Length: 227
Image: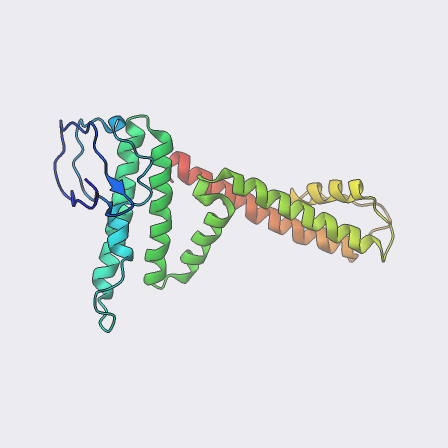
C-alpha cells in the first residue's frame, strides 16, 4: 500500500498480513488521524518505513514555484507531526517501542520545522540544540559524545594554560580538574586565585556543564514522562 492515502480511515479489526506501507519508488502511506482500533501492527514490517507519506507531502516541492501557499504548507507540516505522534503512541501501546521511538523522533524534527515557519526562532534554536545534544532523548549516544567533547576540550585548555603559568598540570591532573569543573566542583591549589585563568576556565566549564545537564533532564523527561 505505498503511496496510499489512509488519512481519517477506520482500520478497526483490519488484518494487515503481508501489507507493505512503503517502498523506494512510490514512497509511504499517509497515516494522519487513522482510527487503528484493535488492529495488530506487529504484523507489519516497519523497517522500510523511514518517513510517513504525510511528511513527504509536507516536504514536496510546490507544483508552481512562482506561487506560495504558506498556510496550506503549515497545515501539512502540522498534520505530519500529528501523524507521527499518533503512530508512535499506537506502536508503543502494542509493545513496539523501537519502532515508536523512530516516529516520535520524526515528530520532533517536523515540529522544529513548524516552529521555524512560525518564526518562533527562540524555540526553534532551542529545539535544534536538544536534537544536537541528545536527539530529544532518542539518541543518547549524542549525550555521551557531547560530554566527552566538553571534558576533553577543557582538559586541553587547562594543559595549554599550564605552559604559561604555574602550577604546571600533568594531563591526568588536567582531566580530573575538567571533570570536577564540569559538575561545578572544581578545586584549586592555594597558588590559584579567583582571577587566574584556571579559575575563569573552570567557571565557564561549570556554566556549560549546567546547561548541558539541564538539557539532559529536559530531553529525557520529555521522552519518558511526556512533559
